[in-house]
Structure formats: C-alpha cells, structure tokens
Length: 367
Image (cartoon, rainbow, N blue to C red; front, side, top):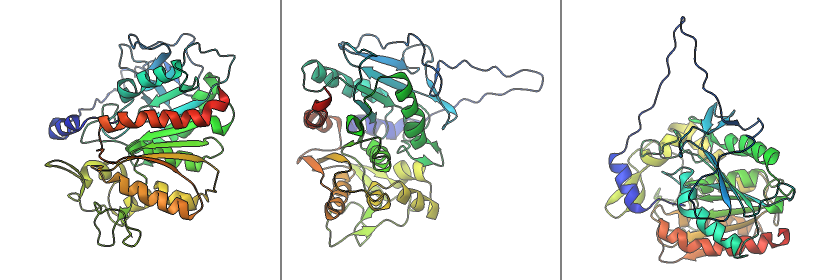
C-alpha cells in the first residue's frame, strides 16, 4: 500500500537515481535483449513464480526483482515494466474468476503488493472472506526504481510516458488473453492507493463497460483542490471552494510529515510539468472532473473510498470534494474513515479489512 513516513523522510533526504544509456556504433551491431514476455505475445508456458511468500495461492513473476529480468514489454511505454500476477489457491484455467488491478502509491512500485497486500489478500481468500480472484500489480514508477526526484507517474499519459495506456490497453489485453476472467464488469475491480487512486478512478470512470467496482485507499481524487484563498491544505468547505490554476510555484507545500514539508516540485511537477499545459493535463486526469466529462450515471459503477482523518497530504479533503459532487449528481459512494489516521502504512492496514468486506459483498455472486 503506502510506504511508511520514515521511509519517505529518508527517501526525500538522500536518494537519487542513476540511469543507464546504451551506445552503438555504425560498425558494431546493436544487441537486442530478449524479452521474457510481451503484453501482446503469448505468455511463457511455465511463468516463474515468486518463491518463499508463505501463501497458498501463487504470484507470477514478471519483474527483475528475483534474479533474471522477466519484465513484460509495454508497447505504450516502449519499454519493459515490472508486473506481479496473483493467482488464487487451486486456480483452474477452465474456470472464470473476478479480476482486480491494484495501483500503488507515490514513491512505490509493484513491490508494495508483496510488502503489504498479498498476504492479507491470500488469507482472506483462504478463509472465505473473499472469493477467489486474479490480482494484477503493475509498476507505475517512472524508472522502475522510485525515488524523490521521480516520485511517481500518477498512472497518466503525460510528458514522461503513456502510463495510463500501459494499464488500460497493454495490461488489460494481457490479462484477457492469458487468464480466465469473468466477462461481467461487476466482476472487475480497479483499486488504487494514494497516487494510484488517480489512475484507478480515471480508468474506471472512463471504462464503466470494463470495471464495475472502484476502490480508493486514501486516494487523490481532486488534483485541483484549493480553497478560494489558494490554500491547498485548507479543510473541505463547499462554500469556500476554489480550483488550482497553477503549478508554477515549486515551493508550494502540499504535504506535511512533522517538520518535513512536501512541495509541488516533489510530487506534481515531475508528473504534470509546469504552466498551462500542466493544468490542462491535471484537468484531463482529475477524477472529480471526469464525473461530468464522462457523464457518469447513478448506479453505473460502485465505489468505495477510504480516508484518513489526519491525512498528511490533505487527501481526505480531495475525497470529500469528490464525494460532495458525486452525491449532487445522484451518485452514491460508500465511504470509510479512520478519524485519527495519517497517510501511512499502519492506517492503510486498518482499512484493508473494510475494503475486503466491501469487495466480498459485491463479488460474492461470482464465487
């Protein structure tokens, strides 16, 4: 789910990524590195499994985290990307299963799925608290190694690459052509934590014919929230509601962890850029604005939003504004709040049972 505050502090303080470049000359032929799997190619006959997870299901390994490079090739990104696929105990290709795509948060990658999600997920399925399902956990970091200089893509098609297309086109094709999925949209879940909530709700609201269930765990759902005085950290008040029209101030504070302040330059500018084009891109990928843009109808999708009452990024205010607008359009949203919760792993873990219980109530018909 989310990295701990301690990791965030350490990361912002000291990490930097070095990138590799490959050179070739006219006299030396380029070496084409073999691709373990491609989104539009047949899956390997016996894909590798992540070892030593102490679960009864299994996780297929399309990453470079466990030895060989088994990353999957994405046409949209023109690059290989890390991906985990969870298969439930007793998975049988002749049966059809619900599917969930889980999008990670800021300063994370697909490894968050192994760290925080797969064990409670597997336990819930084994205990009958969730129906057997297939779960995909793709990487949405810029470089495959998230760091404060490239905190995260927000799973959008932006200046750094087509990360939304990687999910809604490449990954979706790969899942449908290699695994036994139920055909009903009501059996398909898009879920996202924090930054991943942007991608999950954007893709879900854009494709209700694919995804009938949307889950946001402390999600960012109104990227342009501000009060009328231009204060992003202000609490939600429908009578004091403004809109962000600039990301030009790199020192604007959008998060606080004790004495540590998180600025626009740390989170928004790497993904959206600066100037008018950045605001346009934020608007195009702002879940709250997609409600009207895609003319979402009551009952078209079912949504659960969990919030932390003391969210360090003020994301509960973003969520409250999203819920307020949705309800004024006649769209019901289920919610859950940890009143004293912060934007951290411990709060996320407290929310997981509620999320699983909600999913079970929606997916039980497919068990």
